[in-house]
Length: 391
Ligand SMILES: *Cc1c(COP(=O)(O)O)cnc(C)c1O
Image: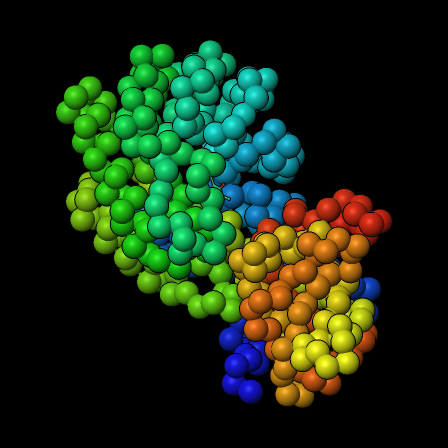
């Protein structure tokens, strides 16, 4: 039954790593996620090696555990922060505010005031109302304006539409920023998370170049920074290019447009640093069929959309699922444990699980270190939030 994909763990983790995670997991009650911090360190080092000219601002929302933040702090990372709560998390670990960017374009006045009071001087914006508020609460701060991007249909988890403004507006906002006594500092974009089309960066960088040139020519404003956002790949079922290929291509796009005199380049990886470091472990609660003649089994497990797997919404992120059974694979619907019919992870995509899979077996959701713990509900149906362990 070649329609279904047997998961080869070796494509995702080296054997020792996976055995280490599995034996650590063996006596723990499910569900939980185990995160190997050595993999985060490696992913971070790879990022820096591949983009030696860039400054990394880790997108804290991907996983704000102190184990993660302190590791990245020690390796020299900066932090992309979206709320006062995330700011507290990094500052509690001794991160100084010169390593923080307030990257959310949606912010309360009182929070901006607090960020500024604590020393944060770099803010994202994409609207006039926000910019005018920033001018009052964060005078003189560095402003980068986020532009809308296209091509987000090739991203598995788009971050489009809601954030950014059109090029013309971005241009005008940067002019206004200067008039308001702010420092027009740069431009940012996010091509969509888990972006499989590297060309998405090409068109975004092209737009940035036009705005850089117009501001220089028409207003003598010299922008200093481009923020290339996140969107770098993690290793799920749908394959992507290697990070190295992303880096080569993106570097080439930058050099094409900006020559050797690159502005400051910022990267904001979240998923690509964390996902591959995590394995989510669940247990099969029930296997059933909806009729005696039904062809598909329903496999209910003790983790679901409300306990960390929200990115399976519309089956967007396809986690590789490994079990220890060796039987032939046949089609399954995979669903969570709650009393909400939206709590189905995969129904249309052809997930095949072994025919000998049994109640009580463990399911290992690979590449689950990002956007799982934080997305977990607090108490839906009484289920506690997803537990996390760090090795
Ligand atoms: C979520 C987010 C990121 C991280 O994106 P990934 O695709 O997970 O790397 C980066 N920048 C901003 C502004 C974000 O909101």
